[in-house]
Amino acid sequence: MDRSAVLASVFGATVLAVAFAGPARADAIDGTWCAADGRIMEIHGPAITTPGGTETIGDYSRHAFAYEVPDGETAAGATVRMVLASEDIIHLTVGHPKFGAQAADPEVWQRCDTVSRLQVIPSVSMLMSRPQCLQWTASGSCSVRPQSGQV
Image (cartoon, rainbow, N blue to C red; front, side):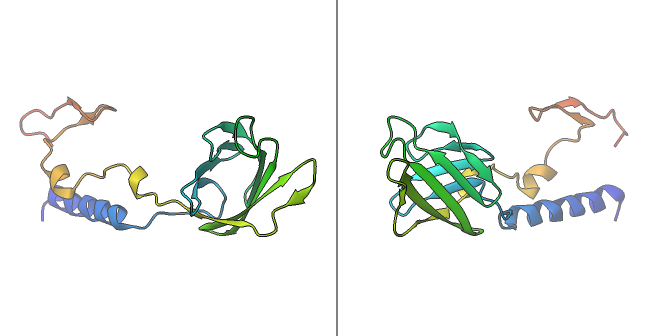
């Protein structure tokens, strides 16, 4: 086998391994979470997009998160607390600062399916059929093509 065929085989195998690998999830509360009733929220460090669609900041730790429900949302002023129960489940409780009470049973939220958020990974045949290029731009077009006889 010549060098380019070996490189193409290795590259193709790598692309296939990445394409079929399951999503990597860290043991952290960051991510997109779904409730059984269709509500969605997203946590990235101290930033959260609430189930009501408001972007706000909360108290973040790797395995827990808390925030005050913003004005204009159901339960405005209440404190929402979440604890990571497993990689894919959080327990959420809502309490109101005036009463100091928490919900008796926590809500169970699960990580949302991330398939819809994945970018399309090019197929091996698509990659192999691309014209040779020495330098690609960020937009994916070739900026420098090899001269005849160069590879």
